[in-house]
Image (cartoon, rainbow, N blue to C red; front, side, top):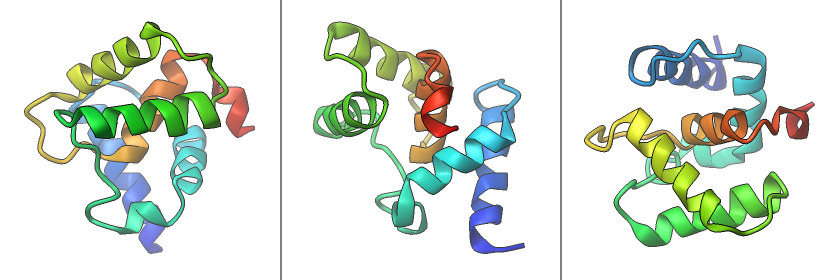
Length: 113
């Protein structure tokens, strides 16, 4: 099993145990690949849920640029809902897991087809 496969397995486990979701592994794999090399970097692979600047970056770079959503207050509300689902006290909120949940939340799976 390669490093990426190990990470995807770890993300799937987080989705099952911490987020109470049954992950679509094909979509999770595509989202993880879409994150690029950031998944291998300890700092870049996680999202600081209490850092407003970081959440703004998720909104602008992922929701608006990648998923093509128009800017609105709904975007930040969705990010906060996903962080709440993951657990605000959870130390390691993986970027790929958050992006996966946001993709599902907005029904944008087709972006990864």
